[in-house]
Length: 328
Image 1 (cartoon, helix red, strand yellow):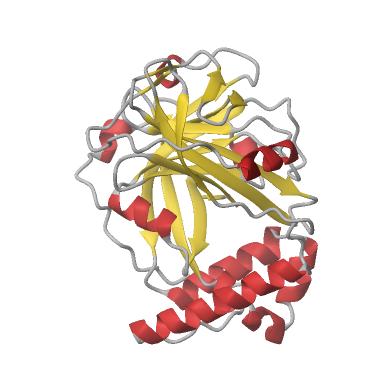
Image 2 (image 1 turned 90 degrees about the vertical axis):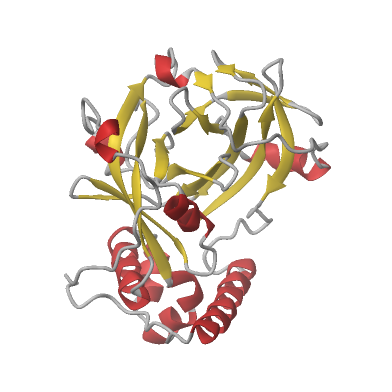
């Protein structure tokens, strides 16, 4: 397998300082789950958490994001400390008896060889993707039409710390406090729009709260949350610092991973420990649930293709050919 070109880690952190004392003890969970809640840090130090399709190979966690929506990768390039929570066993063959697993690590971003990155993603989907997607990827014309979605940036995570705890149980000590980074200033609070209260019943699992732990690392836990127009009460044993940034992520897998609907509420904690919303980001859900073959999904794939063509023309780079790698 040819080596990928790597962007340097944009940080002066000494990775050895964060070495885990245990390593990954729950590979059975990490290697099987179809979704993980992946946390990066924005420019102002606030956490952003999106559900991503994880993979695990040679002691590294591997994630990817679209070339035309690279924010997660750019965050990880600028600040390589990231985290991944494994908390949703949907479509994995595992169950809710699994404990929660949080992995914190150092990210490396691979974004130079777009052809190779696209082939890696096709390989992954042919190996682990939804059955309908695997069928579509075997038709050259169909898969090339999806190039805007399939062109990828890869993010590989070197695990440095692992936390494992029961779903109903006490949080690990180092995860009980949310800290406020020096670069972060709380923004203007908003009243949550009515749409949010329409969306909430669609998500049966408790949301994921992401924040910075006591040591300043990104972290994520599942919480019970009561959502009001002007604040969110977090019902767990948690001690946030006033002004600490946080992100509340609601998401769900549809069917056997036909689609992944998600939206975020980003904000900060007030002196009473309530999450004060500043913005609502994203929502993929519609009446057709974004299932494969839906009109909305087809429109999205076509839009991504147009965005990719325009971006690569500006960069003077060729459009990748969507195909499996030669090694497959």
